[in-house]
Image (cartoon, rainbow, N blue to C red; front, top):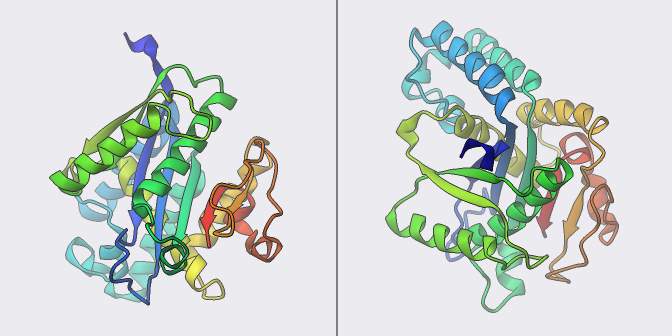
Length: 284
């Protein structure tokens, strides 16, 4: 049976809420980040590195690395209130991200623009999910792993939300996607208390991407670290491309893998660091 599983697994986390009724002006975007790991890299590199990191700083491995808690120095991270300790902590965590092999696919939706453009806008989470699953399939196909089952792990949000997400996930995988093909993915819902290493890494990555889109000139150390690492890997991974989605054309023609869309020249000014490597799907 194990031969039917692919060599990869995907962890998904969001930043910002997907609601369109009351949009937070300080964070008016929804970000969905998909972190793709080769299983061997995950179990041999990321998991032991994070375990050692937790033992070193907390004495046990039950702490969940949550971006908002670390940023606000609360809960298990109150000891980070001193500048020196926080600097050392973040540098060490950043080094783990820098040396961890993984592929990142992310969708960013500017909710106000999206809401104004369409009379009946779809759920941003579902829109982002569809684009992400399509690109994960392209990635797996480029690695000849598109016929085996790949598990996509998402964090539980609530019975209603999880049921809606599972329905949309199945709909996309059953053929409601750009190529109209069946996608060999299985969704797995994980409780936050499961202490999933992959979900914690995805959580650390999602918000810096959103902040970069909202305030591109603001210093964003986390984004810069991710961008530098992935830009370096991009030179070794020719399948990766960048695509912009414009509200002027809800379903623009898809570019082949490795090509860059130039339908929105103004947006190309953002192509630096992370964006020079990550397959980015941007509704603006």
